[in-house]
Length: 243
Image 1 (cartoon, rainbow, N blue to C red):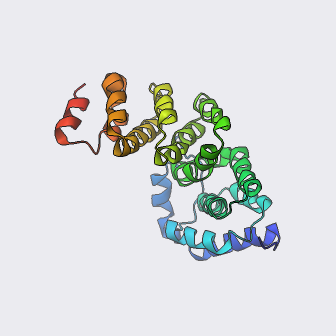
Image 2 (cartoon, rainbow, N blue to C red):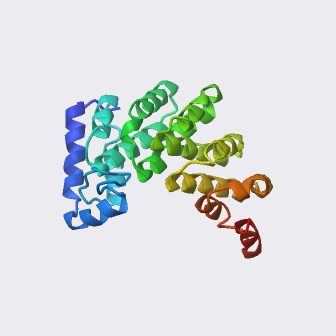
Image 3 (spheres, rainbow, N blue to C red):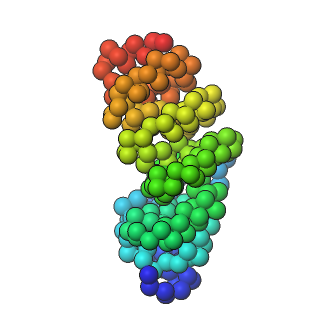
């Protein structure tokens, strides 16, 4: 890892994002990510940078950033700066096999989870950092259930999305248990996340998802159920939705 100084990398990331920005897209982004007063992303700031441009910036600079620099980027008020920082963290995590380095990234992620505060930030990072780490460290998986019980929306969605790493490894217990715990959650972002993960379970192990739905479909929020059955045959989808 090149040590060019945290201030240097932070400023280079910001400068590259500003150069790629399209300010005319900011109003649409604010609406899309519910950054208006009363929205779940209230107060978030945007430059108007596309996701592919953010990924290019992350790929060009992730090797140079210190953990302190990444933390400074996560603290930024601008949405695209935080998402770029998360892309950099994912790249660093995935491209090193050194456990100490990977753990430092996970610890930063957990320490600043308050800055992973919209659905795209969660979805782009939780499976690749937290989920991948917990897959290798099963003794720490209690964190998922602590976050699910926290009453804090983004920690709860992060817990659910982290299990995508388990699903890809054909391990489904945590996803199903979290789905049970969050069945009565009031927010549709959790309904969508749980339904999505159940759908991913069904792609790999249909009978596992059928068993869960046979028991609990009548109690599931409609959005959660709709996401869960999206890939079923029309007949099976109608059957579950009618319950």
